[in-house]
Image 1 (tube, rainbow, N blue to C red):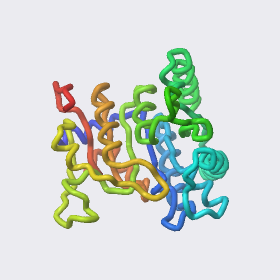
Image 2: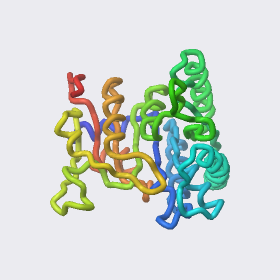
Image 3: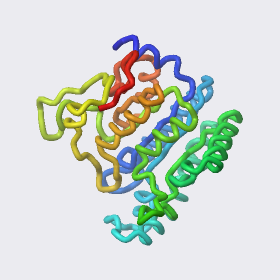
Image 4: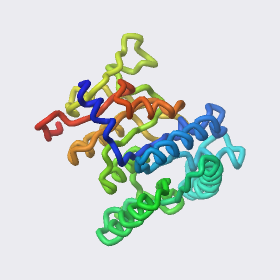
Length: 276
């Protein structure tokens, strides 16, 4: 287990996924402290020679804040409009904070059909490779303004957990760090069960592991623990690793890359490639 953690020190290309619950306060306002700390950490890693891709949620949450709405609308057109408004707010905030650390960023909006169609998939990969070669951090989000999931025209990833796993595979990342609203993967729901224990490492997604996953999620976000396990499954198929941890204090990313026992490490057992 310790050896697995120590291997993370060598990770060069890293995808960071931050969820809506980490980017917003409970009152729905942007958590500027977390965003600033995230910009500082990722800029520092870039200065140290790492290659960073950021998958960021938060567009709809930021849009709700901009329009002074307290409740996420149910209709798709309303959600699409709010996402369009919120994406500008989010990127303006990122641009301000990253520029204060001298780090250039770029926006990349994706839909599922783009990465499933070979030619456009290659174009996306080429664009991100060029950005990384130029020392620029791609900030990726689902294109919620046009992304829908209806009949046979499915363009939606489902949530940004799944998007982050797909991006990690596309760019052949060494590691995916998923910043969420929980410290890691537990033996039970820690909000409901005081005896819940943080599981430091998961080497295989078995049925028993899946049974431990609850239906987590905030009023602003869409992801849950089952979604994160699906991501781990995908990454295992490509011999890639993932760390799940809390996102309110992004400086813990430094600790993860020092090999410290932060959150839950999902890494394939040596010689194993079966997923139950």
